[in-house]
Structures are given as structure tokens and as C-alpha cells.
Length: 400
Ligand code: ADP
Image (cartoon, rainbow, N blue to C red; front, side, top):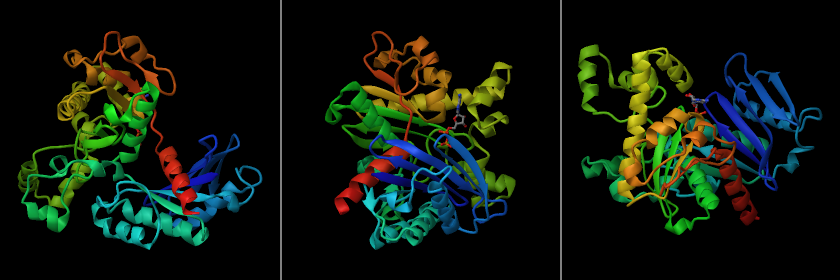
């Protein structure tokens, strides 16, 4: 079985064609600048990499170009479109309606549309991606994998805000969480790797990338997560502030004569480690600057690590202990000093890492647990596309 995984953004569309027998991508790529001048497709398959420049006025044109690349004689991966058995779509927000992936039908599309206002930048593009595929590949089963479905199991006390209750009832104001597909994947892989019983396993997953979130997972179910009503909440990120006192916004609005939307844009795009350091949102640049003595770059790193560490400690308290801590995504997989910082001084909780292993991790899943540690510490490369493909294959097979 071959599954096409689509991740549509407002002006981009990333794809992977996954062979479910090997669970490997046999082609991957992405269209960029959709709807803009100078749109192009980058495509990799068969050991070849090509860039195709072609006008893509909309997502339908992007899908058509993608399919043409996939069946191309020279650099394609399949002989005909009929080899694509199902399509899995990454969708950002289900508004808490679905706790798992679902076969796309009219009702699912309605739920997607109803929740546009929770993810106004991403959700319309996700919907366009589905519609474009439906138009070009009629009859092929399509599946929606929601970014926040995994977090739907959080208990009420974890997802509610202490605001007047009617805001939850009338406007669905609550914690939704994001990166759910990644937290689900790495927590599942951790249990498998350790041979643990998922129903008796407490894990804290740290998805640290350009956007970062941490989740507390108890017995296979998400109990709490740091991102919140939007992906702005939680730890500081590349350019996002993370949590802060909301009264700061009113104070700044008066001082700077700015509106609430402008301030939220600043919190999203000009804050985080970028805002504090004034150097970069990229942790490699921050480390270089800090090594050269840049105080604000060091401060930004310290603040990030401190915040992550507080989440790890509080989540261990929330779920009554922890068996395993997982690091994943760009920073979690590649930044040894961030990993070491986050788990430093947690010996009292039974957490010790092996500094050598942490500094030189092997590819794939890497156990960096130190001697005498009661808690396993793992680096697990995330693979959201594989989760989407697995869910899609399963739902499509059952639909037949
Ligand atoms: P996204 O949230 O966009 O998917 P990623 O998970 O790819 O982001 O993470 C991107 C971030 O990972 C970069 O901004 C950079 O800070 C960090 N990163 C990537 N590689 C390294 C590395 N070798 N060392 C330190 N940080 C890294």
C-alpha cells in the first residue's frame, strides 16, 4: 500500500509518498510560493532531486504538479496515479471534536471549517489541500490527522482556564495543545523501545523545535501539554513569547499606542529567543553568539532551558512521577547543551544522563540515560508523516 501524506500551508504544500510495507518515503518534496510569482516544486525520489519552476495559482495546481512529478518517468516514484491507495492530510485544529484521525467526509469537512477561527493561518490552507486532492484524485480515500487530536484526552482540570465558565461554553476557550502527532509518535516509540507496558508508563515528551511544546503522557494518554489555546503558549520559542502575564499587553498597548492584534503579532514573530537575544531564532546562532560572550544570547538560552526544566518538574508532579523523558524535533534531537540543561539538577527525581552519550548521540533512537538513573532519557527523531501514513492506511483499509 502507498500513502500520500500532504501538509498544506498557506503558500506551501509539503508531501511524502510512503510505502507502507517498508514505512519509508519513496518520494518527498514540496511546492513553495503557491499563489505568488516564482512558484516552484522541489522533488526527491529515486536518488534524484529536481526543482521544477512552474506557475501555481492555487493548491489544485500544486497537487497536479506534485502528481505529475510522482509519475514522471525520469524522477518519479510510481508508474501511475492509481498506485496511490489513500491520502493523509495534516489538519491543525479539530476544536477538541476528534481524539483520533478520521476518514474525511462532509461532516469532517464541516468540523474543519467550523474551527478556522482557532487557526486562521493554517486551517484554510489545510482545507484547500483536501479540496485540491479531492478534485484531482476523486474516489481515493482521504484521512484527516489533527495536530491536537492526541491532546483531546486531557482532563478538564488541565484544559480549563480560570476564566468565567461561560467563555468555555460560549466560545470554546480552553487549552487545545499542538504537536500532538509528534508527542504521540515519540511517546509510543519510547514505550516500544523500552519494552514498557503502555498502560503503566509515564513519559514527558519535549518537542523542541522552532515551535516547542512539552507534554505529560500517562498510560498512553495525554494528561497535559504546554501549548495552549494557540501555539503561542508554553515555553519561549524561536520568535514566540510563550506564557506571560496577559496584563503586560494592556500596559504595552498604552505605552506603545498599539492595538491588540499588533501586540499579538509581536508576541508571535518578534519575541522568544529572537526577541531576548536580538541575535537569531536559531539555536546554533545563539550558541555561537553566547560562546563569543554575547550576554543576551546566553540569557535567551538560559531562559529557554529554565522554562523547559520547570515544565518537566511540574509535569512529573502532575502525573505522579516519570519513567521516561524524551527529546525530539530540531533542538531536542540536535542540541546537546539544551538537553543537558533541561535535565540538570534533576537527580533528586532520579534523572541522570550520560554526558558522553548525550554529546555524541547515535542516529535514530538514542538512549542517553546515565548510570544509576531511575528515569530513562531518550532522543527520538520525530516522524509526523509516518503517523499520518499509518493512520491513513488503517482507516482506508477498514473503509473498503
Ligand atoms: P519546526 O518547528 O519548524 O519544524 P524544527 O523541529 O526543524 O522546527 O527545529 C528547527 C530548529 O532546530 C532551528 O531553528 C534550530 O534552532 C534548531 N536546530 C536544528 N539543528 C540544530 C543543531 N544541530 N544544533 C542546535 N539547534 C539546532
